[in-house]
Length: 357
Image (cartoon, rainbow, N blue to C red; front, side):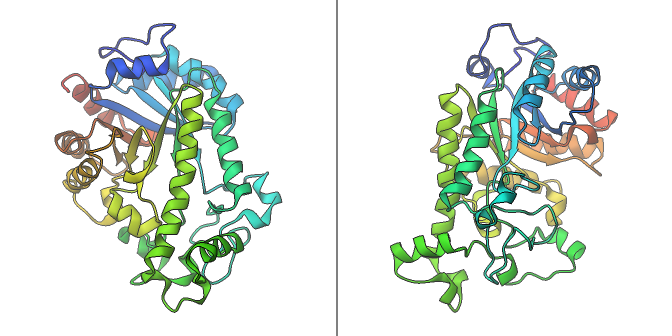
């Protein structure tokens, strides 16, 4: 991790692994941001300094998998004492110019509709198949490009899953949906590659199942396909002296149910579960509950858990409670979505808390 005692900038010459080892026992604060290459270096320096001055330790930067932009911003953030993580939208690749040249790479619903031209929920849901060698290879090539950037501490996988079979309950009214069962239009992936490989192993065709939701081999097949992409990304990141981090659903059993994501089975160094309580119509203390579930599921692994918190509409007092719920239930840090949404009052809470934890 990039900082020593609060306020101390990273020493020149330290590697991400060295700095991380020095501070792995401290409670860490992160934030996600999305980069805009049109912005000036001066504006980014000002933003990074604001985060550092208010107790933040790390930024997870989405550059739309542009290694050049990441290489430009990384030294600016590190100069201000922040650790940098390369945030990538992994299996969901909206507007990916390479993937769009290969319609067969996209995930296919049980209805038989491809994310290439029929996107579930929202237009930016353009999911690739994690089984097909070409589509997974493309994602892993992007991971490698980010891992090669000097000074980056990790590659940070987001959307490392299938499309939502169940949306968070608090979001259902927005889409005028009821989801009491696994609906065919939201159930992925039934492409030719997935069906052929599964049928070769298990001698049955998921397209012909009367109720595929209760077939455990079919479910496990898909969980394993996501796991395999993560484990390959882990090897790539470590080959380049980086760690692997991931944004995941609140706790493993819930992630399994909602998006075919069993992250306690992965090779990954740090998970940042997005415990966005308002999405689930839960109260602030649910952050503690979900954190504890994840920590317990990881107790026999080396993976750290840092709780993701959704800051819009949270008061400063609620944010303070959320941070303490996370820490008191075993989290090693807290990450805030997202940096630009943090108010002055919330930043003051983070600063004060960083000085006491």
